[in-house]
Length: 89
Image 1 (tube, rainbow, N blue to C red):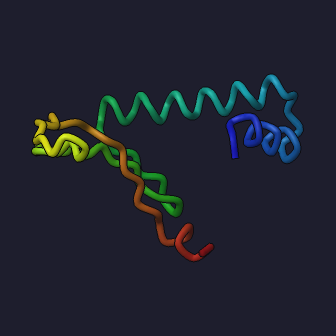
Image 2: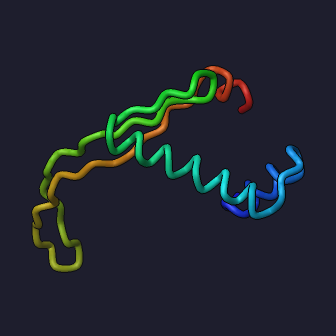
Image 3: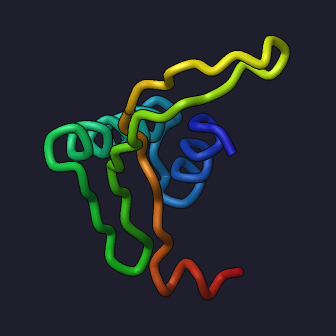
């Protein structure tokens, strides 16, 4: 599902215009990104939790050259599904 598909679903269920529903999706995603940048965690009860995790620096390998390379540490976002969301599957 894309942002456009999600905005169409919001449009159908809530009666918003296409522009309004797309703006709602954009604002929600922007808010999620901002919260993760500032706080590193966002919990939506019943849905799940978004966490910013730090990955350690490590040694990788270029397989074709059989040469080790240094992979720097980085941050990534992980999602842990909540109880209600786990019941769907």
